[in-house]
Length: 463
Image 1 (tube, rainbow, N blue to C red):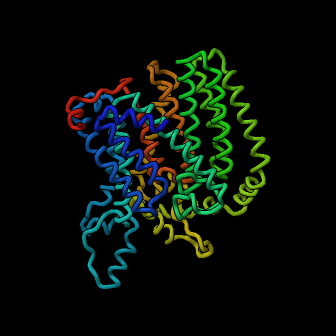
Image 2 (cartoon, rainbow, N blue to C red; image 1 turned 135 degrees about the horizontal axis):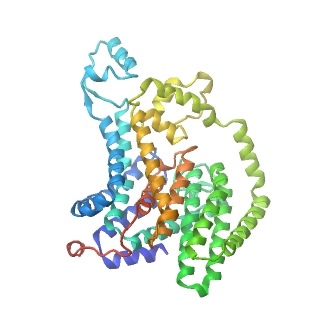
Image 3 (cartoon, rainbow, N blue to C red; image 1 turned 120 degrees about the vertical axis):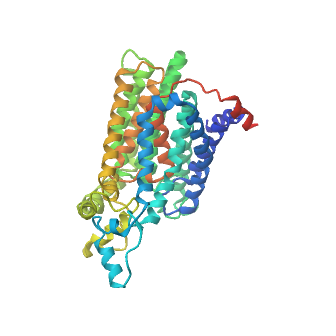
């Protein structure tokens, strides 16, 4: 599936499409972990540079795209600008007056040094790394927006589903082997299904994202080949069952809790996309898939799942530490401590009784972490994104008459999954999920053409 999509890309030899394919391959292979694996993530960031340059040049030559999508592009620009602004050197007379900087001034005074020029961010190295981490998703968003191609978007959807299928197969090998041989990342604990990720929660997020996109493919094939509708219904029901079992085997609490709501919304989207007169065919099929998954999961996984939730109720550190983290934001408002600064900032307020062999490197709540690191500006960007997402989702579900409305609905579900999971984790800090988020956002924003015809110049460059 994935190889056929890339083969079609190679046959056309369009430089924009080729660079997008390069980024996807790099992200699938090396983008399944967070910043602790800097070398592999640098490969993904470097792979994004050709696409970023080509997509930006295409967009600058196409003023109509800027005009039609100026809010989304402006929001993207503001997001990129945030960490860069925090890195601008400020004179001592200015930064020493900022909230939360008194301790730094005191430390310099103790050692007999005068304050010099420094950035707004208290951790400029981490802020710069965070800015670099934005390169792959920004390149993916701009690349798809520059193409304005629904067909290219569908090929990316196929690639994401292929990546999910590959991760499931690798996860099965991981579960069967019980050792580190089939794990791509050394930070992964053996015995859990994680696929090509370092974190089982992020793997579960990908599985949930596959639900709406698999439903979309099945619904589109039902419309195209109505005589084979039962085959595709059975196929997507089997996919539901496999994904449900995989999420259960991963023992991701957030994934388990989000599975049924995501499946329900995906079925509703698929029913409308397949143009069924009533929801019964897909609903019955999905109900059967859920029933089969529940029975098998009860037989194989229920003891582990119950232990997982009982352990969570007894000692869930992230919930206990959220109030402490929230208090850490106060001294640095309204400007924040700097993107990427959560770890050292949290350590300054972490109670001694909370110290143990583990460490709290993220808030496990993206919205809280953005508030600490970016202050009011980060909060404003979140509000603007919520406005954009709500407006585009309502249009896709209730007002749009365009041919891509089903594709946009599936993208809205994928984005909603990531946003919901971000309340208790940090899925967007993995490059591959950030790219999937960016592609889904580009799809939801709207693509104006069903096919993509590269310019003659780009064809000459590709030869």
